[in-house]
Image 1 (cartoon, one colour):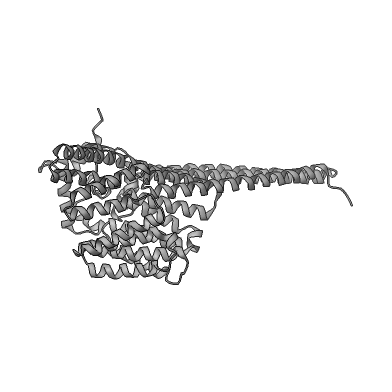
Image 2 (cartoon, helix red, strand yellow):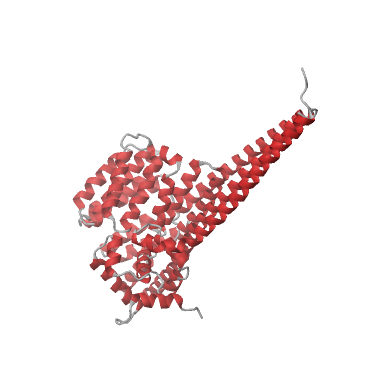
Length: 506
């Protein structure tokens, strides 16, 4: 049997070495992605939405490089959740759609349901309450035959969220119906692993009974929530302390209420929980000191509350700007990644052709005529590949021009009420949000979007038609903005916004 030439042996060994290294590197990257996903989940539990977004984004970029659909989908889910918590509902909805397009998502019903949870919340915040309810009902339908713990927990949570919606509308009978459905499902879970879900359920029941003025029942469920936390030695008790504080405040037992509010703040600080969502604690403490006649303490905590609110507004503005930049960077990264991928495949093709040429050249080296013919064919093929590279370069340049021409799409996106309208608008007018937030910190996303429509010159009727709202609603919201910005009655709001945006920072 003829032995393989040394050249072939070396090539095979090299290929095996390269393949094994590729597998090793990919496994290392997957472990790093999983680690980032776990950290991102922890940041969510600590109400650190901005950090959750940053870490999930890093995981997503790594997942995109590996091409792992499961991890791309999971990291995209965390990004969409963080964007939602940062009050960027439309951007969150856009990311949710991207996640639904992933192959893994289409096969994972539970992930679909969790995405619908975020989608439902986004619709609710955007005042699309019927769409929000529709998503919640679709979650129940989607998971109706699932018996696993994770699915039962999602359905129980969904029933609880529907109950909360009725509670917000003071329809307590309907709220209790859904709370009961939620409680029946929770009974199927292992209390040891799902005690947090039980604890939240008891608080919801307590709040509902408190609304009915049945304070004994309310206290009973608040106590059950607290005792469950103690039973499983969970040190994160600030929610329970807050609830007790609210309860005793309503009962006019101000010393007890004050004690629990202080305990809540101490618990939050001890376990590095983000204080921003619970800043009202300082306001409640200030009010109680006012009732108790301690004006110094009242003033002290009122000052803390106001200072924290200002800091929260500033941080929220920075976070929203950063989050929007992440989305812009994501699109640019996708474009660059696609561009690099094309060049890699072209280079790999050329390299493969060179290897084939060398192998064939060695086989036919004894036959000069065949060698010359082969050289001509390979040379011709290489020229074709060079033409392909040139053509791809031209296509890439054209694609870059199309990206730069995105400005022209803003008006069409506004008329279609497209979720990506405001993101595109900020590409065209990058100073718009910055100038507005400097002039009036704390503006909501919905207010910024209305300002964008007005900036572009759309009338109240146009805005109402395009955003599917009533003319009165749009007129009232614009009037509120005029008051907030102190715009004179005789001045056109659109001209005022353009003058503000064009004004140079001194």
